Length: 110
Image 1 (cartoon, rainbow, N blue to C red):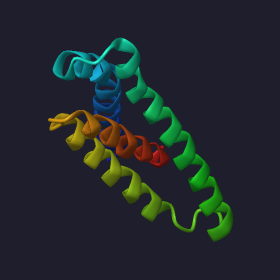
Image 2 (image 1 turned 180 degrees about the horizontal axis):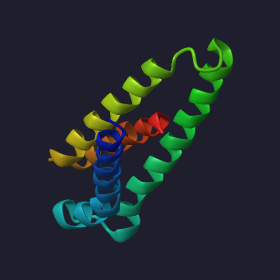
Image 3 (image 1 turned 60 degrees about the vertical axis):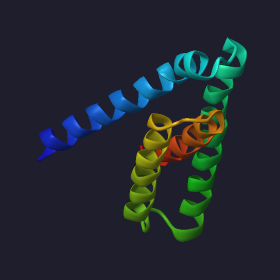
Image 4 (image 1 turned 135 degrees about the vertical axis):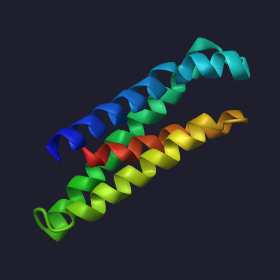
């Protein structure tokens, strides 16, 4: 079972970092954004990731060590799925930023 979980985590990481890496290039090509503006999607990822990690630490201190790990893991996994779907079906530019924000919340899973 450990081999299966490790394999799933590898593909999840691979998909996530591939999306993050090419999102700026996609935004430049699809929406005609400048490289500076397309780079803001990565900035949104970093800011929301930092905020979600901080919120995770606050919740962990409030609730107690390890009491709500399963709920936090599910929140992270579902937000990652929502973020990747938003990025995959982005037809307008603001969906790129929203998808990156939802995707960044998934980092609390790790």
